[in-house]
Image 1 (tube, one colour):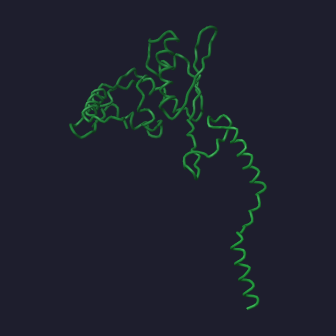
Image 2: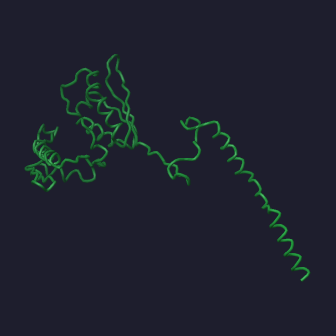
Image 3: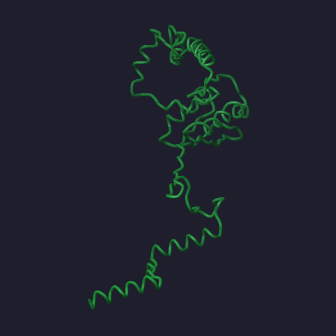
Length: 235
């Protein structure tokens, strides 16, 4: 899934991932409390896997999320390089059925755990929002864009509009099985004036089919058939 061919590099990345996981913490805002996700993380040599053991303190929160979570297919985010791309993608997926969601700048920064960083909105957009949306639009299964709302002269809210990307239907034909015989619209790069005439003939034949041409025989075959008919008639 990661397009990594060098197995040494794969195992190295697993070790790095294991080390990063053990340092991950969960913030419980109401209690201003941080909890380690895992009590242990290991990457057994040569097994190509990571084994984790959840910490005791986090178990009650894991049991509480049953039926109250957002799921998505990992391949849609695997090529993200920025951590903010993952976070923004996840809360957009949470509201995907609505197609839009407005966040105040304060709420957005809180969701992204930016605290007192990026006080200037232009820095927030340039270094966090825009790069994340570029990756989401390029690599994931959803598209997203945003506008901003002001209170007086100050930008206070961002409105995100988003949705599932449409997969392009492939029109199959008998000749190539992958490419239409006639371009279906005049903006097609292969459209020509000849295509217009072909389409016109096609529409005409659908409503008024042309009569089938009569079969014709050459003179030699015709004389032989005539002779056979006479032989049958006169014995």
